[in-house]
Length: 90
Image 1 (cartoon, rainbow, N blue to C red):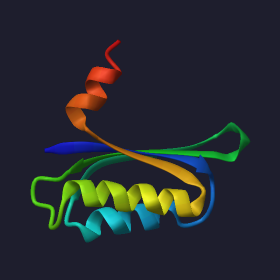
Image 2: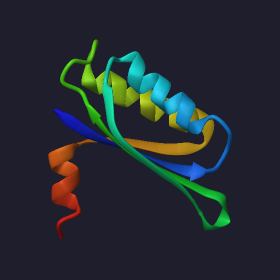
Image 3: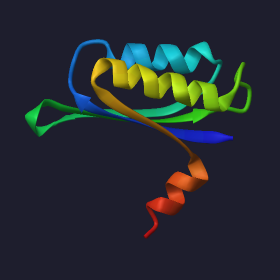
């Protein structure tokens, strides 16, 4: 299964490092990553990850990412690739 991880918030040092550290800690493979700094110093990142061989539970990984974001002042969402694609076809 593949999933999309989105990260949004005020730019600060270490966002990419910390998010990818959690993802790789579960053994998920990062297939693609894109990030940008938008106006007003807003950080936006999108990652396509392969969760086929993760260690542990997918839901726990998603919860850990969300908790990390909340603790550090940015929003992280993890969605199955099919759900993400369906939402953005409209």
